[in-house]
Length: 427
Image (cartoon, rainbow, N blue to C red):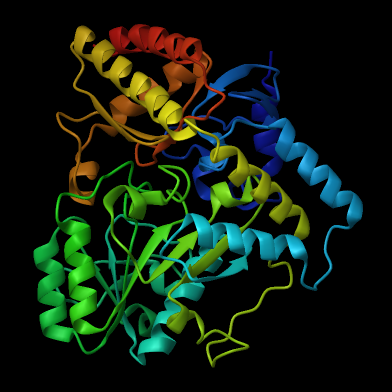
């Protein structure tokens, strides 16, 4: 019988580039047809063929309370009944701003936008406007959205101007972006010694999640903070993925480091499209209408999206929420690691808060180069075996995974049991 997923994918490719509206959904790196999801509830999703899966993608992070949480759905319903969009201020967006500032001590003021890309793009522009400098430092493997200045890969030399890694990005944009190795503080020190008076900002995924899960090595984030302070550059923590996902105060709360600006998304939208950037008051005062750095958005602070975000943030503040989330992620990575070890498969895993990483490698990677050395072919075989068994992981060896509060110990045990069979077949 022909799969409805395959039929839909063929149909979609006629009118949508690659058949998808975001590239990783196309299953290009793992092969096969993507699953077209018809509905989701709790820790499970159902595809167009009616097959259900225990879901470890979680809409790429936002579904921290599980899919279709009743409180979030009700908040959206009530907001929608009052009107979908006004193009004018609402009390709810003030409440959202106050809550974010309360939960994230580094944020004095915050501006709501509609996506993580918009948040990081705006934060970079603000840093440049505040400092009067053009250059930015980013790290290979860290993804900060698809703004032109951020779609840049490192050149061959340590301090070489970057080259665009996407078509359509002018070299004149890319030349202002310095791309260094994640977790290599020595490279950052050299960059500041050479061009410190040109660098407006350092932007970093404080815990990387877009080259799989990569944690900062001891001293790395502390060193970035010290260098930015010394040279007058703006330190930007991209917490679009990690904000309220790894803990109540994001990565900055876990590591006790205060960035100048923070970008947020995903969890603060509760499944709706929301982003935000915020930080020190003296920097935020440079954003229009207070300052000369322009940023605007017709749907910024959408009342329906804000309602979903507020409901989500209130749920994650419940006592024990993050302890339980981290315990479930630990159960998963520990169980998968043990199953692989028993099967004699080279594999390791790691987690922080409700995020996890799976690596077909002898040790947990610490950089983009180490991630790229992992066994992608074996990952692809594992992915399809697990998908067939009803367990939905990210369709790429270079993406972090997520657990939610809706995942039960029994769900994770079922995943580990399926993985035991999958690992045995990999030998």
